[in-house]
Figure 1 (cartoon, rainbow over the protein chains, first blue to last red):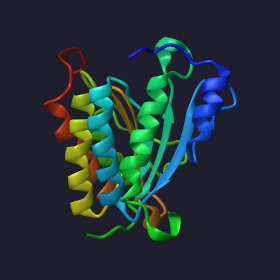
Figure 2 (cartoon, helix red, strand yellow):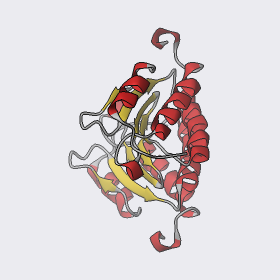
Figure 3 (spheres, helix red, strand yellow):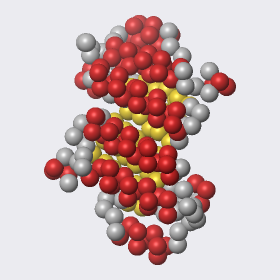
Length: 105
Length: 105
């Protein structure tokens, strides 16, 4: 898949279709805070995403503590956001969907 | 296991026995940067540590990007470092030992 830097209109369009992803101030990455019921749910989510990331050959920057997973996505090769970031973001949202505590859904 | 805050002498003694762990400036946590061959090795390490952490009911704060895993350990209930932190640290070192690239061993 092409890791070309996306233009502003495409980025805005992609972000508009997603929930909870925030663009960094410099515009070159997107960020989302995922919250789960406990550590096992959080790490289960990470494990599913890790397999997806490896298959896409596109990996997240992420921080975990207990039930919290903060994710940053960017494409270093493209010097900004590429289609890969939005593809991985969508797959992460899907992986999280079944694991979210009800009050966070 | 007791999550009591350790005294300075015990912390110094524990740290002396370990490699690569650095105490935070405020003294309340220890930190180590793990490096692996690739993402699969790094996430394999995290998976092993996740199971250990859940069994100890003591969880790391950790950041991963590709082959890099930065770990911070502290015991919030104790307001500093407890025996649990050093127990988890030792188990993480053991999990990493077989996975390190030769030039980092």
